[in-house]
Image (cartoon, rainbow, N blue to C red):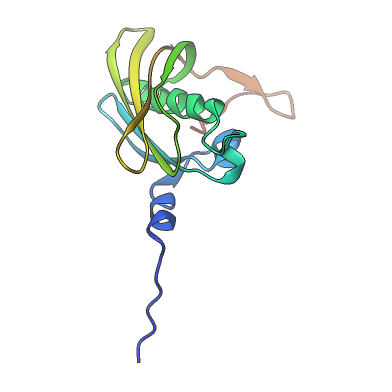
Length: 158
């Protein structure tokens, strides 16, 4: 007799993709799904600690997801693989978000120094819970000093 392990579909989805090497995103449990040709996609399986007092996703969690997905999209649009910082972010909360959340972002236009992006956040029923637009500034990696005082250019830890 063969023992089959049943995996909860929500657990399977939560383990998709890979972890981004950013401490805050690790804490939240954000999973990176894809980044190519000016598009980015991330996933988060909500936990009770992500919720507000109404037991739905806290707006700060949703805004973080939108920001991250658009930054991923902006970086994937840049042939120089530069980092980005958020210059402006606008979000419309459309309905409460629960379950497993997926954010799909697109770079609408990019210049030598800026990327203009948009994103949509979907719940696990495929309903749009919020939409965002954002402006991101491209930055080259700058040298810093290590513990010995030597100038180094750190790896970008996405």
